[in-house]
Image 1: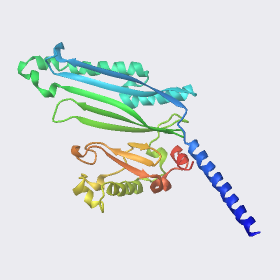
Image 2 (image 1 turned 60 degrees about the vertical axis):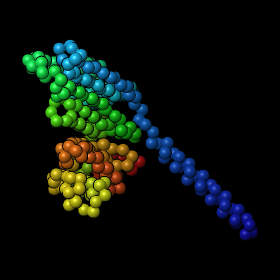
Image 3 (image 1 turned 180 degrees about the vertical axis):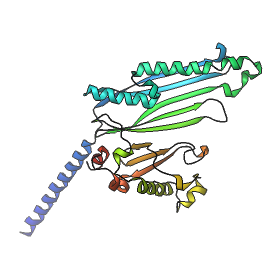
Image 4 (image 1 turned 60 degrees about the horizontal axis):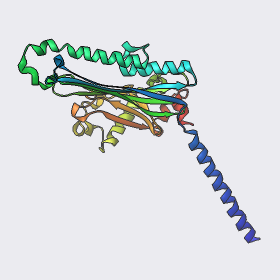
Length: 282
C-alpha cells in the first residue's frame, strides 16, 4: 500500500510539473509581436559648397522606419502619420513616407546652400570646420507587443559652434486605437508628485548613490528639485523608461539620461483603463 502511494505521488507531481510547464509556455507564447509589418526608406547625400569638393560640405544620412502593413487600413494610416510627424515634424503631416523624406532632404540641402553667399566672400574661410554640417536621423522600434508599439526617434546634428547636438524623442502607440499615449493617458489623476519621487529614487539607484542630494555633485544634475516627468517616455517588458535629453537636467557632457521605472514600482499609479495597465496585468 505504501509503495502504491509513493508511485501515485510521483505521478501526480509529474502531471503537475507538465501542467505548470504548459501554462508557462502558453503565457510566453501570448507575448508575440503585433500583427503589423514595417518597412524603411533611406537617404544618404552630401553637398559641397559652390559644388567644389575642395570646400566644406554637408552630409545627411537618414533611415526612416514606418508601419507598412496592418489588417485595419484606417488605423494603419493613422499610425503612419504619427510616425511621419514624430520623425520629420508637424509640417510634414499628410505626406506619405517617400514624399516626406524627399522633401526633408531638399529642405536640408536648400538651407545649407544659403551659406554659400557668406562663404564665397572670404576665400580664407574655405577650410573653416564650422561650415562642415552634418545630420543623422533614424528611428528604432523599441517594443512591439500586445497592442503596444514603442519607438524612439534619434537626431544627431552639427550646424556650427563648439559641438554637435543630439536629441531623443520617445513615443508609445496604442495599436487598437492608433492613438499616441501620453502621461495623462497612462497614469491616474494627480500622479505627478509621486511619480517624480520615484524617478528621483531610480536616478539615485542608477548612479549608485545613497541619496538624492548626491545627484547634484556626482552626476551632476543641475537641480534635483526641478526634475519632473517630461512626457518623453517608452514602454518595454520591464517598465516605463523616461529619457532626459542633453541640457534638460544635466550638462551636455553627461549626455542623455534614461530612467527605467519598473512596473512593480509604478503599477499603483497606472490608470486601469490604460493599455499599459492591461499589458502589465496580461
